[in-house]
Length: 278
Image (cartoon, rainbow, N blue to C red; front, top):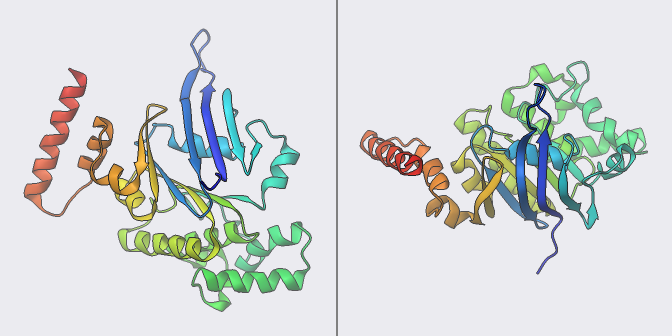
């Protein structure tokens, strides 16, 4: 069996309460998952389920209460800032809002070449790599001379993907990368991510609240509810024939075009919710 590029074991994350005497809020309750090279693991759940906290814990953006996070064989749960900087080449992220993650004052060429030059690449080498990256994400060659505000939301997300690819990472955390896009643009960005993975063998931890999006891109799926993984398995099984009532409710929540079928799904969802609260 291929060893995992990321292995999360019994991960617990707690946040202190702002009110004196209150118990800490436990956002993650013993979460375990793994991502293999060249694979996409989709993590799906409603808002507040803890899915984004998993990605932020892997990136070192929230403190880990207990458990381990092994990346490429090394436990990074409590990595120092210096150790985190050394991980940047192999561990990257694409956020939900591409515009807020792109410096509006820099050209696209400067944004993409900055991490390469910081790593010691010569300016000419960095510029050549930028041209290659723009081609990989299907943006025009002259895009490098423009500013982020001159691009649409889907194009900005392509730029964010290009930046994540600058140093050929082993794993990219994709945190709701399509939720701010319209359906057509979502499909184009998902197809691009799949194409890049097939070409580079990069692994994705793909976080989303949309079961349909996760189904399209993922090899395996983990469903999280109130900080716990309640179901996991092959994407085809989990997203089409789920076993856990919460996953079934997520599936029934996805809208369909047929009004009759939509009404049937709504009734089935309400029946599941009533059974769960009984």
